[in-house]
Length: 253
Ligand SMILES: NC(=O)c1ccc[n+]([C@@H]2O[C@H](COP(=O)([O-])OP(=O)(O)OC[C@H]3O[C@@H](n4cnc5c(N)ncnc54)[C@H](OP(=O)(O)O)[C@@H]3O)[C@@H](O)[C@H]2O)c1
View 1 (cartoon, protein in one colour):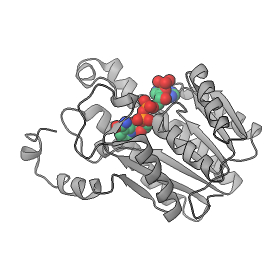
View 2: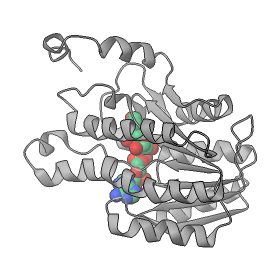
View 3: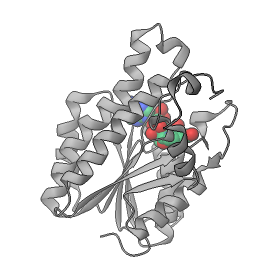
View 4: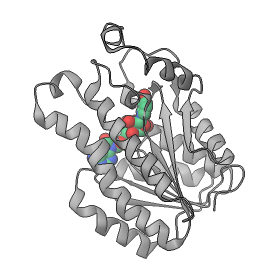
């Protein structure tokens, strides 16, 4: 179970190579977390991360193959995981791709890869995952959304719309789960310096993976449903959300 400090004993990461997720798991290991499962595509990289987590104090780290785009595998993936593990206190849904916006505007395959990973892939695995957590009677799912989903901007609307869909799905899902013991926590970071944003010009109020991890741990401890990182982005986005379209499309965003 999650304690008042955001601690969890067993954690599953979907998109186990995510720098934000790994920073969060390292901090959870400083607390009560002992059992970690990293699920993702690059098994060798996940095994390297697993060794680092064990050196940091995790008692066991499992690595399992998971591809968010392989929708047909998701039901069986969750069924097998549940059969092999006693339970998961916390799941971090961290996989995602920024993609190539320019390419996606003319190439359906790139647009499908972005939306298919960030939205359809997430929905596809969340449905059986939440079913399993309801069966065990408890569990918290931390979902990495983005401020980009608050209002799609012309320079990034394929990624932004995929996160908007994910965010909306998770808000409704979270509300539907009240009383079940299962909780959904939506995290909305701004620009974070990780391998996803490498080489890009940093946006205002940019942060790093450790800062997002600290905000996630603090939010879990507070029982938050939505976590903005950094917190002032909530105010910034509530203003931007109401800017009229003809003005918004001229902003250098
Ligand atoms: N960095 C930011 O500025 C920022 C801001 C807001 C929200 N976010 C969100 O935060 C989450 C984590 O991002 P991050 O910054 O930690 O980036 P990251 O280090 O690049 O992590 C993204 C992870 O997603 C995995 N992934 C991508 N497609 C996948 C698929 N089809 N199946 C399984 N795994 C897949 C990648 O695995 P591979 O190694 O196999 O590619 C990678 O480990 C993402 O959802 C991102 O959209 C990031």
